[in-house]
Length: 236
Length: 281
Image (cartoon, rainbow over the protein chains, first blue to last red):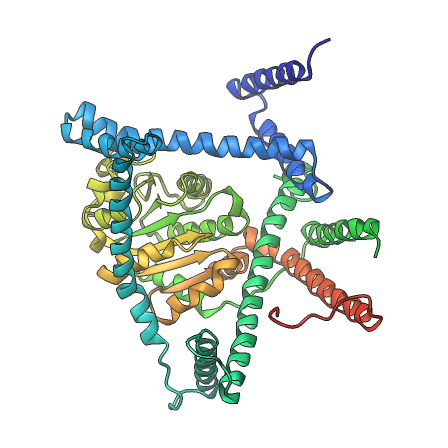
């Protein structure tokens, strides 16, 4: 009696050999890719019915593929051209220091040498904080400036209404996030309440956009299944 | 409501959505889009790029958002091909992005008589985040070095005269994330190079503070943004074909929200559902 693992490996071997032959000889590469995509799509969508083994298998395949692809890209497009080639082919010996700095991150696993990891991490945190300061000046300062919209101007009425709405929103929402004192005064209470409602409107807009995005992904997959796989109406 | 009916009601909702969407993919309905100003602004920005400068199409997306970022990338690449603008595909966020952009450009180039290396190039995926972008701004050939086919980028005719960010006419960030900030903070903020943003629907609302502050020249928001761009370009691509299905799905979602609220109010009147207040406690 063969074990389930052995049977799975056997099937994977047969499937892999068939796929390799097909791709190698360009016999059915396109068809195979379409069928594989269709099976993977249906397997992932099977979670909509309930949690199952097929979904979990394809979920793991996806994670494995993404990791493998990322690893391949890092080797071929980053480490080899940007580090190994300058070091080994162009004899720029100072690139060896990049390896030493990178190795410092792995000292986290040693109690004795973990201080080296803190040096590397601390340096990167400092860099990120510095870049954050630049971002504050170049990104947030112009946005703050742009938030000062004129309430009375000679522009079209809808522009003025927009500016007024913007002003009310920014004041009421900021008052909602003002926690330095208890919000007892009726004006402050009313302002924070309106601010909370306006935040809900903003969250609703974000949620609506999220739904739109998710529907676009569903449409993409349905179009693939109907047109490219089943070839119903205008298939490729 | 019993556990069985709760179990099946969700499945029925998903099935209704699938049917409503699939129906409009099978029946041909022509979508007519109103082209918003943020989308038109990107179109005008591409048209305004002089021949001496290069457009950078930063593909920071992966197959997970191909439904939105795919049609956006195709519409923008087609515009560059049609208008005869030189461009470079680039990636610094997701390793899959430049490969996906490459596939789209290769599929479209013959229709416009364009060729890799002469009219466009792919710089591939470049790691290093902000420091890399800062180095790139000062020395493009020195930072990118080789294209996706591992050939020196300086050997490609399309790269003639492209040395620093001053030779870049427009950067278009296509992304499901807020990777736009890197471009705004370190490229627009310092060098004033125009930036355009093509994002997924969920990122749309967060784009408008940048647009209002003139830090980006325009916004393409989700599939609808791609459809608007196709309308501007005068061709019916994936986005325009999919918009009726998108609208149909939205109609079903709205109907289900209304129905859900009616059922909830009925249950509350009967004392079967607890009263809820807006915003939690």
